[in-house]
Length: 284
Image (cartoon, rainbow, N blue to C red; front, top):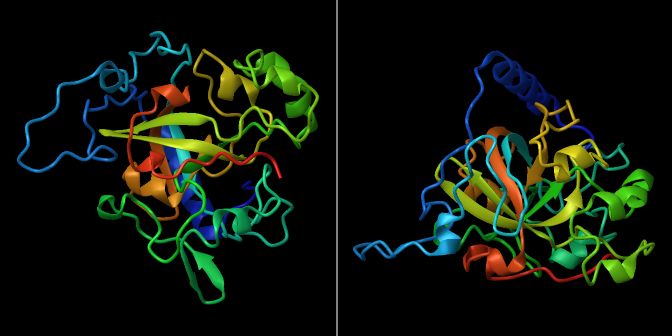
């Protein structure tokens, strides 16, 4: 959960917001059927024949339909980076990534700092495809491909009260059997497909934010609404260092525009570095 950024990032966010406001509309990125960001092809081997799951990774044209599972695209979203163990504002209620809205000991559950411990703090690090974008100084116990979206369906009173009406899969099992259960999240561990340029990656939801916690129209709506959040360049999500590397962000800890995303079912997620270690833990 991200309530404040350091001053340098705040300045960058303001600049990014001005740039977006002054630029003409940008169409959704067109993904390569075999992106360099997530799927690796052995050098010298012929390109594999696209499968239905490969061709489904390309965002539809503006105004187009959703997906095989019916979930719509959210196009050209600004994202920031966060990581397990980060403390960016000790004075804020949601200023520490040692816990998440779904896990009161996220740091312990994950296995430690998702980066490098230096100078008494947990710092991020560059991630590369050579190591499947995994951390280099620790062994994670949960999926390093994680993200948040601005809807907290457990601890935010509005988010909890509205989740049965707004979450598309609320009527399915096992969610339907957990109506009224504060110890069960409809969002934790759900899969998201992300596209930036020719990079296609996947991650699991493990927190809520940035800045807002019941932005149902943006998160679940079908009209490509903009995030309510106006801070951090109007960011609509935070992504982990693994996703920062996979998506080719220009900075390790900054603000990156141009991310398109959609919910996908677990059955639609292709094998890749994001499936090496899948998080299955519940709220705790």
